[in-house]
Length: 399
Image (cartoon, rainbow, N blue to C red; front, side, top):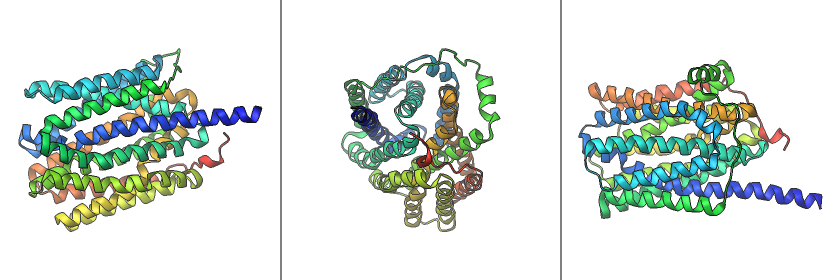
């Protein structure tokens, strides 16, 4: 009877992860639809790719600040309730996007949308952590990211169809309905997380300094941020580059679909390899591939060559994306998860901010090929930093 009970508990925990992965898939599909047309949508408002970069950077700055203010909220509230609230606000924001035209209204709703997205990211990540056994975390993250990237695989193709048939209005409306569907599933699945901290860390400055006091946390912070730096090239500057080169939205959709294929095909596989052999080599190899992809795009700035190189680079992205968050959570002490998970998530915004502003400035004075050089230098820097990570092997941990 004891053994049967253990098996039932193990199955129950795995089932929760599978349910979260399904919800993540739907949300990712929704996000991919919007992100595929977002740069083009903003370009129609600002009529300047540099301005698009600066506005995206502004939203990222707002996002960055929000993660620090979310720390006490994350600690003192149930994560399932926070996740629910974030989905409700996201549904409303996307629905409003489908019919507003005023530029200032678009700016305001964009800010609300970003704040809701960050609350969703923070609460969802902790839900996955709390429902995972220590030795299974990287494999569970691999499953989550595989389905997540499946959403990003089919999303661009759907966006290309929707924008041609229904314009931007249809894209935002369908995206809103998908998030609403994920909200209903979350309630049907009855996923709960009642873990809260009685002692709340409300001192934002102290939290920031305490986070970076630890060398391993600091390295993990930057290593995790590098992949987000790369995605700015893929989802912001590449669509703008292709539009300026005379390519259609359909071409962009096919390109973004192709980028997602390696992350879906290899993400879970790389997560399992990292579980058995450690994280360090995965980080180094992944960033090396991205460095070479960006460098050769600078050397051979031909549309066909560049798109092919960025797609191939996604193999390296799959190595990094499916493993970095698990690595960070592995080096944390359990008591520090709620306190430091939100500051850790600011690495996404810091790197998004830098990756948007610097190339935007470069585009004011130089051609697009120098954007690729910028990303090559950045990826090389992250590769060097990867040599200083700990080679944690999850499969050797006790359950």
